[in-house]
Image 1 (cartoon, rainbow, N blue to C red):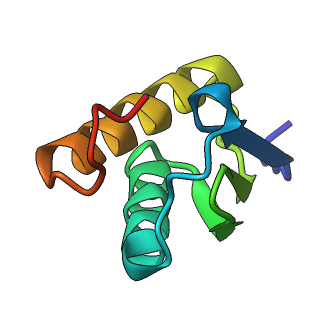
Image 2 (cartoon, rainbow, N blue to C red):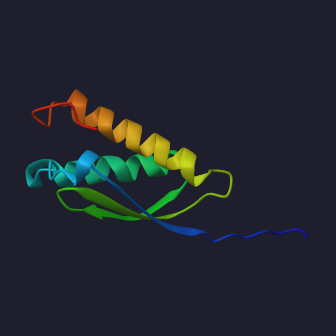
Length: 94
């Protein structure tokens, strides 16, 4: 078969530890942009990223060579590092 096409859409969401409402409105849009960029850096395609004070939703086009678990591991680790490096919360973000 000379041509192969794929369309894999995933909706993933992840919550703040203990579902505490720590995502502040002042920096939420900045964080969502960072998460979108992290998804794109893996070769996947961000369609929309949104969320509220205690969780984030991501709707994305998944690249077939990337596993969902690896993608979420990267996004969660690097977005948490971004929050901690920029001191956006009073305590360590998890």
